[in-house]
Amino acid sequence: MSKNSLKSSREYILKISTGGVCLALAFVLSQLKLFEMPMGGSVTPASSLPIIVYGVAFGPVWGFVISFIYSLLQLIGGYLYTPFQVILDYTIGYTALGFAGFAALNPDSRSKLHGALNRFRGASLLKILAFTVVAYVVRCLSSVASGVIFFGDYAAGAGYDSAFVYSLVYNGSFLLADLAILGVVMVVFYMVLPSSRQDNTIVSIQKFTAEFIGTFVLVFLGCGTAMTVGCDSVNGGGYILTALAFGLVIVAMAYSIGNISGCHINPAVSLAMLISKKMSIGDFWGYIVFQTLGAATGAGLLQYLFSLSGKTDMTGTYNAEGELTAWGLGANGLAGVNDSIPAAIIIEIVLTLIFVLAILGVTDSRFKHGSFGGIVIGFALVLVHIMGIGFTGTSVNPARSIGPALFAGGAALSNLWVFIVAPLAGGALAALIYMGISKSQESKAVAAEAETEKKSEDKE
Image (cartoon, rainbow, N blue to C red; front, side, top):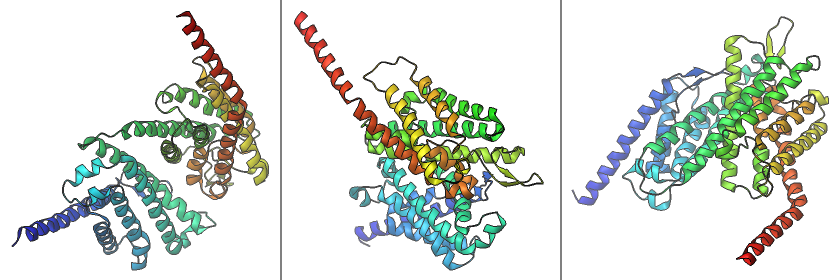
């Protein structure tokens, strides 16, 4: 046997044996039940992680093979019902995951077969996370399509008019949690493995983690307060308490994670900073993803805790017997504007504009505001909440709206687009307005600085 054929045989054996290990790990992880999601489904450790690593090491063809085998084993194990569902759900989803890991590598790394773990560590962490998120979107959409086809009969029983919405909420409830677990595992994995090159992505990950924490706290405490005290027109105290809760979270986070990420915890704020050229496009998308994940995690934990304790969701809907018919979770809605979408869009644009203008002004490095910036921003959020709660529940933050809507479902989910589009429009408008009205002040500041430098040169 020639050296080339011997080397080829060893590489082939390496692929097969590594694939077997990845399959075994995937099945072991899939059997570990961490906790049950309120909307259904058991959250397990990220069982797709071995498949992603395999795709990173050996490429899309082998990634497809291992994904397809895993799908067939799921079918044999009784997890799925028809071969068509295997193709639609698991095969498409896990193939996307296999491709995701491989796509994060550069051409030189693809041509190498050995040192798989080191190549995984050598790849850009941001690329791996980005491709994994995209792959999970594919995975989620294929699961939703599968649910619409095979589980439509369950939608009515669960209180959903649309099989699509039911499938989206059902699958999203545990896929988002699994994605969060996967992200943590991959970051730890990335940091532990040795690397042969300099990588500056850890700084970005620290920022993204700070944004995740901040948005989680915002939803958990802000929406949690609304769920506890209520925000109806009769209970006026609920307005103030909820408004203060959201504002005080901003104050607390501004003086903690603000040192790391700037404490945006709001896609509308991040968009304004991007337009104002105060952050890069890469950081912008990372902020958006982790803000949304943080909000979803906060809302999911709220639903779980309220279910576990049997506590009444004051923003939810109950029947005459006192049984919960629909979660509220402090989600935004159109009841306060009599279901008028234009009214909701206008109020959200205006309130976001006011809030983001305050942020842009107080964080402008050309003017000195002392160390009170976080307090000013916090009270600005209290201010817009005092008025906005009676109209839409006050979003001014797409991530804050997405998190609760994913778990509340129903009208909160169907009207979610309003609370994504309007705050983003308000944030963009605020950036453009502030840039316009502060332009002359910028010129004055530059002239004053030049004059100061000239005087000091004359003295010398």
